[in-house]
Image (cartoon, rainbow, N blue to C red; front, side, top):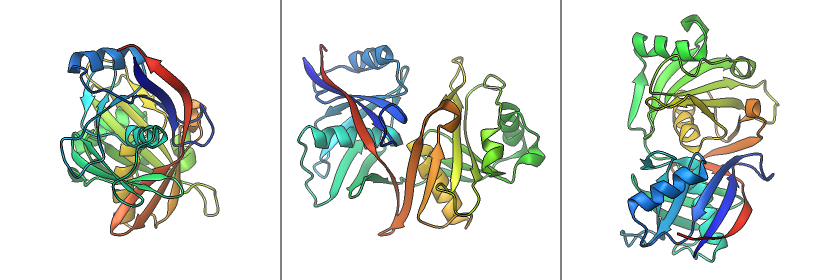
Length: 277
């Protein structure tokens, strides 16, 4: 039997954020065994904590969707760190945890809430007309409705689209099967004085699988933050809302500090026990 927990990420209210399954002792499991269990949980991601291979890391995490292993993802990073700390993990650095994953080492800050340092963008810059037309076909809008668009890829391959207004984001009725293989992050701004600065939606489709919307997405918000702060559209700190149209209440806290952009959120434990793996 192996210790297991299921947590809810980017929310302080259980069952209102993005769930994550965590196997706290994944050592000795094969890739196939990890993938099979992740497929069975039927969650967007399942993680397995294993011993680090880099001496600078506190632990190593393997991150699986129902179909493939990911080199990095945001809500699994925070959720796994929360589970590791709750299980008695002790950071080797005061207030900082170093996670090893597919993209290398990721630093997690343990302060008012957990926050990870946004990894660098692998691709940025202008989206060409063909990609923009494909993106608009999924969103069900005309290109004229787009205020700005850019690549904001920190691993998954996000295209970021700014619609200017949060209501425009909430009112979208996307055609999830209009195009294959897309990952789109949509953002719009709330009026000054609102509890959140922006509303975010994350839409994706991989291969022949069905299109879907992710409730609250750490990697996307990390990429958006670099675009929005770098272009002067927003200033630090700010809060992003996500998951509203899905009945969730996800909140991502973004802050620039110590030369890093930190992506933070609350995490709560919902299930605690063991699994026979």
